Image 1 (cartoon, rainbow, N blue to C red):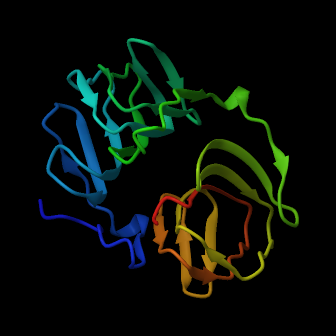
Image 2: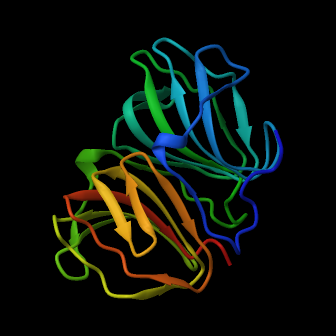
Length: 217
């Protein structure tokens, strides 16, 4: 596979209706690449589906792994992670992932700063919702230097002010539909906006998104 979406000065997106799944070297595991440096290593972002009772060989994360479990139950030798769990495995960590029930994940590989060594597991029952701008509600998942990762809940018909993305912004639409002046992004879509880009986001229906900012400098 050729390199994919590695020019971080450009807007990139993947609408759910356009996504095509590619089989991986492990039986029962398929991937939808969003960013890709090398075939099985380097800077990678993707959606991943594990069929029931499938597994992936033990592997190491040279520069870390970040996961949000979208559906089902993801597991490794350290525990079980139900849908909604946010997981960070630091640089140099390794594991043998598997699932009994089947699962769908959003995964970012080999993108950590070498000093970002915190291991994080936040299950749905661990979420702490805080008030955000307007009527938004926010769960902070991780922070390191300029980088911030959070879940953001938008009530129906909420509109945000025009704002600029210092260090860029990356969004996965988990529920509902996220919109701005450039288009609309249904559940399952992914979008990435470069450093100093700006927009006016809004929603018509109740919406939940995963947001990562400050990591594209």
